[in-house]
Length: 443
Length: 146
Image 1 (cartoon, rainbow over the protein chains, first blue to last red):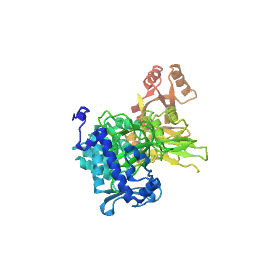
Image 2 (image 1 turned 135 degrees about the vertical axis):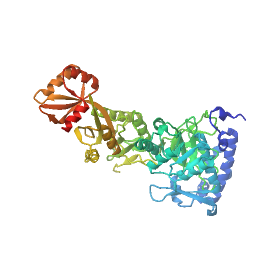
Image 3 (image 1 turned 120 degrees about the horizontal axis):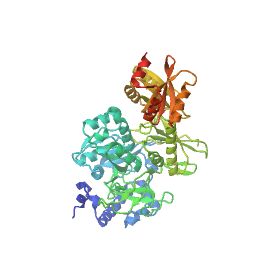
Image 4 (image 1 turned 90 degrees about the vertical axis):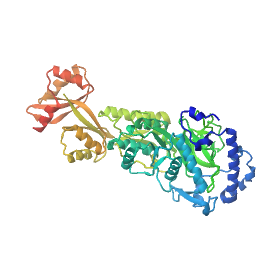
């Protein structure tokens, strides 16, 4: 077989082989895995069994991949309702790890892994790092939080399996992050994009110039971010920023990752089968049309997930990627239906506000959106931190800037917002997922 | 002949002005003069200090965004019409004044004003051509000390 990946100018890692499977073979593998997984889920998980029975559906009815659309959806509340172990398909004697995500209300959701699941997880994380141009010899600073959150350990074991050097620094303690980044000659960092912006911000105060460090790659995920943010981050730090996608309910980080083409995220669909459905009708939409991403785990043992509604809004990219991978891509996820807020009847996503802010030169994505008002008279205030780049001693220039940011946002969302400039470092920095919206409206 | 001016962004909230002032005081830096421009939402504090580089570091360390601009200090007679005569010269040359403010100290019958121009070099030339005393940093800091 021709080694076309060399033509593409990037190294090939053996773990990435499934990324390049001939489509016919890939679909066959997916179907076999789907049938086996659904049988296990039907046998071992009462919720899946009863939902299938309600529809008169048996595992053997799955004869082709398109039959997946007959299966019932699973949603986040199903995980809460079966808290803690109700969706496990393996006995505890085979479960070697659990993770949990902090629920915003009450109980967390719990996810489980067998030894095999952990191996799969490490293998898809290798594929993420390989797609991000990393390999043995790289020094990876893993600033995702270690603990119940899947980000830290997921990236950790993947980086180790890749053969890279891992610095398990976890989240927080920004000054120490920067010191170690510089002193250890770190070449890649894993964290949320908003935390990396925080590092960019802090570095000069410690006399560190990120552009001069060996740091060359950022693998950023766990929250939606925009293309404008990538451009800004790359300019400010002279790295290449890769988008990684994942969610605990499916496995954690490692569901998908960008390649060097940076035109969508490849989903490791030999393990995670993607569909995109209309958010209202829940019917599958044609390739290229926008909808909610629905994922089905094909190989997960401890906690299989059937047609899980991710709340992430994306499209399935129909064309094959120029990197040579055959696995499909989703377009970058800039929005989560959970993050959406409605202003005067219009749906708005924080990422749209972010894109507006970043359209104005000199801004950084340090912002927070505050919603106020009573029934029907909603007001949006966007607080943006002043940066040295755009700060001027002239009042007129600052007012002009305020106006330009407001106009840039209005052009995107068609709603007038109030922009308020605030002092630097006054908007709370997140060390994990950034909180972008404060809703103070009276319900 | 130009003077370095520090400016910083302040939110229009109680206590915002005292923070940078306290940071400078703690570092033993004396403010020679200042002006505060404000809108409903924010203010811009402009300061002239002797050691502006150190002051900038102190303020940045305290978390402020600090901008350095060059301003022009000129001497005017401290009498009715003293300012008007300088403004006439500036207007006649078609130079735009962004803003201006005064020093708190005086020497004898003269006051010192600070002008922010878009093009300070051109302004200095025009003023000097009309025999207006443009005060450089060395002289200015010397006077402030006296």
